[in-house]
Image 1 (tube, rainbow, N blue to C red):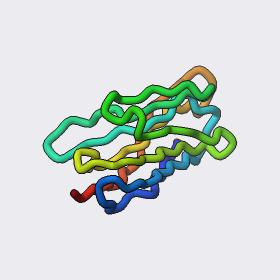
Image 2 (image 1 turned 135 degrees about the vertical axis):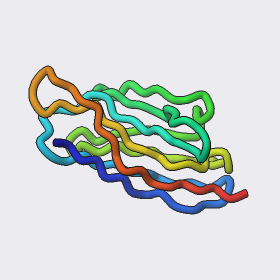
Image 3 (image 1 turned 90 degrees about the vertical axis):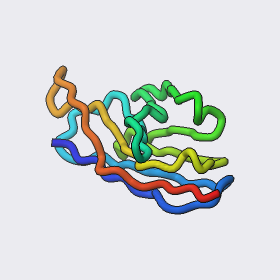
Image 4 (image 1 turned 135 degrees about the horizontal axis):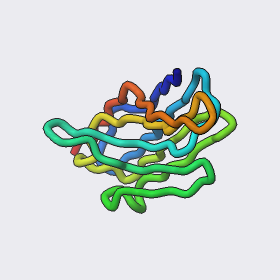
Length: 120
């Protein structure tokens, strides 16, 4: 099994910054893509950003230019630097990892979520 533990959420004023971290642990053979998703009250979970093991990134249009995703493969950790935060960024942020515990068999794993609240 693989466990994902997120940290770094909190309350920040509009225009401020936060950095989320997510560390994967357990019986990991390898990790392919890692990413961040978010879910606001009454809304569906949506993609924020993803990053492949080779460092290729993808962002939701709503966060391009403000958020940066990165990862440390040696530590099995993914980060999300969030700048110029807006009230509409308020949500529970979830870490995701496409991980293999044995070769050629990939599963999706999710963290427990961390709350990000941006006040106006």
